[in-house]
Length: 119
Image (tube, rainbow, N blue to C red; front, side, top):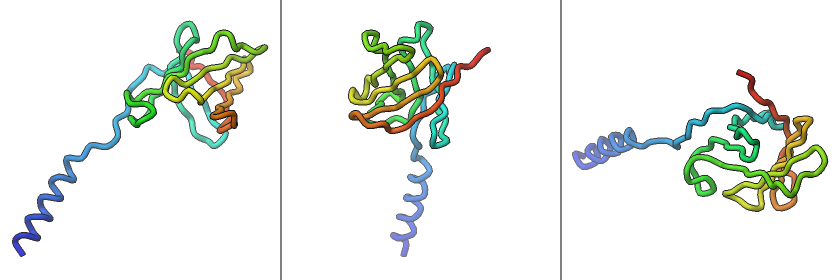
């Protein structure tokens, strides 16, 4: 009986020490509102060459961030193309109209609209 009580108390104490997923704080100056209703904040570099998203730490983004870099040679009309540095087969297309398309392995995963914050 004392053994079971000891195990229960130790388990409760250890459960209190567990820390949840860590998120990285970024200085967001834009966001994408996806068609599925989810909004993701991001930091757009001054030159527009990188997009940095804060994400829970996982295998694809071990530092808690996901970075998309612009492919300068792939500009198509009024649209720019970005690739994910953590998952090379993941691309993002952003058009001057604000339309955003997320593509993985040649398949469209999501579409949305870009908003840039004005301070």
